[in-house]
Length: 419
Ligand code: UDP
Image (tube, rainbow, N blue to C red; front, side, top):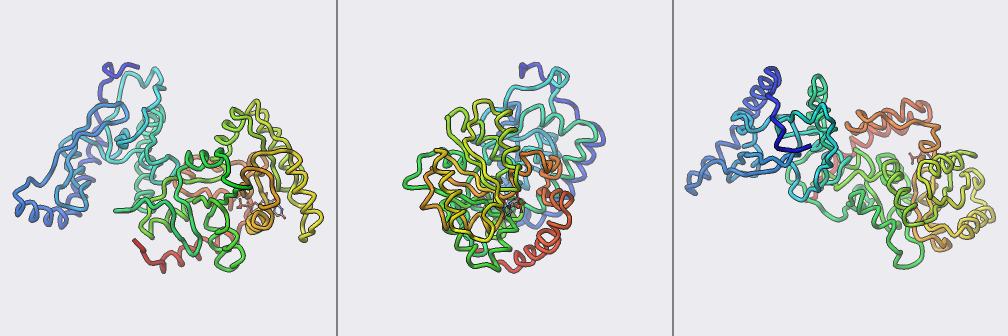
């Protein structure tokens, strides 16, 4: 693809009309902020708007207006829409420190390009944590999100995610407390880097915190202590994102086991790191191991153990499992016993483990054995993967989601912003 051959696709009349109406409504809605910025600018003898040049996904300059002397500088972008410099939904305006967009555009799309948008599928993915703060989507994916009827789906997804997950003036703290749980604010790549770093001493552990673990630890102080004793606590899912937002914190990523495993396997096979899978019903971890070995050639899974051999806290059986993990010479242990068993198991046994890192991964082996299919992308893009899990196992997950989610939202309502 050569960028200079690309011409901007003239917006359809309908999308342009939508843009003009939305931008006018937004400017009307924000008029009190504009008025107060105008007064401040008048007294400072400055112009109301400042011009700025950003780059879009095709690395074209995007001339945009920002409101001066206001905490809501982005209001100016709606004026850029009226002037035809931006659309409401379009190609990504690249984050300042973004990596280059892969050159993967297909021949049919290579003749055309869309305008940059205030919002885009990529900005939507960043807001939900499917992308890190400096990442963007492939051009192909961005083009697809703007074609025909998909444009309106992207518009709906973006509007819903802005409402639920975006926040003004959010800070990027490195860690924070949410309902007594200390959460590390990491992107997926930082989490992976940590996983492959040499431990400072002994076995280092990590757990993922989601709405279910927050709810459970509310009732069980022991689980709360077990989570807080882990070396890393990753923020998993949209519920924790909403909690962080309430505290005034922008999460760097949605660090969940399902998205982490493919990256982990690729890196483990290139770095010759050995994995041990412990947990799930008999046969499930072994099936997941077979599938992963096929998918990631060179991946060394040196042991599997199902998660129902040790029910009833039998010390001898627990020691046997630890011995087989240590004897396997694994570097990384993936522990899928579900909450609160896995967090407590790690707290109890980490000092006996000879692996570098141990990670509590919940029902991950069920997904990777193919026993339970992963949620479709559109649900993940909205942060509604839990709906899919409820649909998969309605009776098992009823309390967790149908009771647990509203309970969590109620707790969130009472949570005070800290920053
Ligand atoms: N599990 C286990 N041993 C037990 C209880 C549960 O290995 O004594 C497994 C269970 O088979 C499932 C996982 O732990 O694979 C828990 O999955 P769930 O979806 O509840 O966990 P989440 O991913 O939500 O933490």
